[in-house]
Amino acid sequence: MKIIRAGLLLFAFSLLVVLPLSALDFPGDDFYSGWHRSGPCAKYDPAGLYNVIDGGAELFLEMGFVELQVQKYAFSGSEIAVEAYHMENQAAALGMYLLKCSKETPLPGIADRHSGDRFQIALLKNNYFIFINNFGGREDLLPVMTTLARQIGAVIPAGAAVRELDILPAENQVPGSALLLRGPYSLQSVYTLGMGDILQLEGKIFAAAAVYREASGASYTMIVAPYADAALARAAFANLRQNFDPYHQVLGAGADFFVFKDFQNYFGRAEIRENRIVILIKLSQQPDSRLE
Image (cartoon, rainbow, N blue to C red; front, side):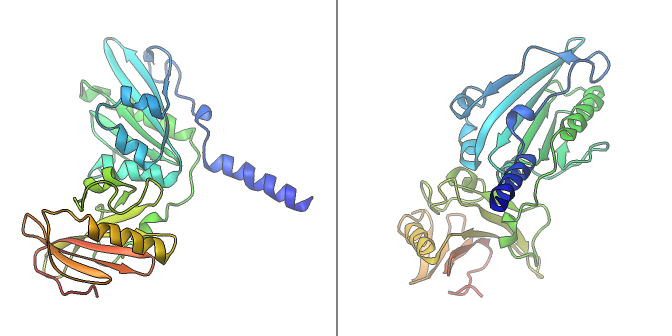
């Protein structure tokens, strides 16, 4: 009986941490003086996402998209649209946020993590990634957007801390450069290693990437992909080596590493370390054969 009760408590706690989509209530009419909902809230499942995002649905689906809610608001000929992307977990939501918000530019009056300007606010809360769009870009509508962000964030409980970026070394990492990757579409935003799911992340494994700056001022990018065990890591490394982009020139290789030069004359190296693949790219000088 105690085991059953403990299980029920854990289940109830999980419902608090990962907010069900139906529990996300948008602000109603007059959330800001004169503003009202312009039509009903539209919902889109993974299959319907292609009808909403022109050419960008693949990235959301790869990262772990569940459902999208769109609510529009209008007043005196102006319109603001809210797009709330429900992702499968907090890491998936953070992954989309980092890929979409570029350099974070916080606005006054919004406590939750966000980045924005008079055209768009990107908001991150728990397993939600949210866009608040002001397509006309009118400066005087920024307080309305800020109020929407604040009220929407207030109904979403805080989620657990995301640890997927912890696989990256902290030393010399350029602040704000870290990204989460989960397949070929997100990896493409960082670098081209080869066709298809070259690291075999399969939309399930979170790899991470960040820019690092050396004491000399030179910079490079590190990609770290973790796997459940060493066998899976070695299989992914073999796939990387076999299907490596032919526009890159391999300069040297061993059983568990290879060094290369890309078509822009930058250098790189890749190595398997137990259950991880570690890749350095955009190096200005040819590296040693082995990672330190």
